[in-house]
Image 1: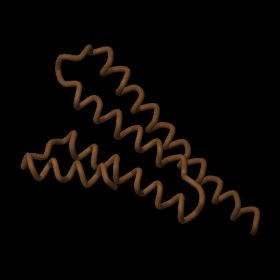
Image 2: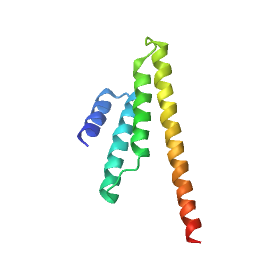
Image 3: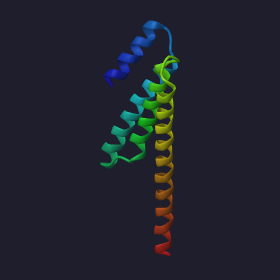
Image 4: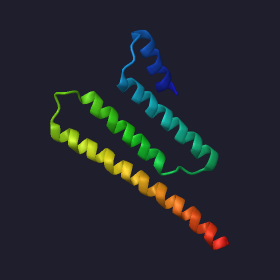
Length: 106
């Protein structure tokens, strides 16, 4: 909460908001949401940390600028692709699991 307030205060002082700032605030929001979900259900869905990692990698790509090595950009974008595929597989498995449980009950 403190880091979020501090970042908002800096944005107000600078009177300028960039994409990297928005992504940082989004990461803070996702972490706070993950904490809220944990206290509500005493468990953390695996997709929430994956979303945070995707956002963090995107922010890192944006902050590097044009002077970085192209190979690093490929590695980082490949990592984002792998994380997105992992989210897709997990989501697909959880949906299949729900339908499999309803079939057993019928």
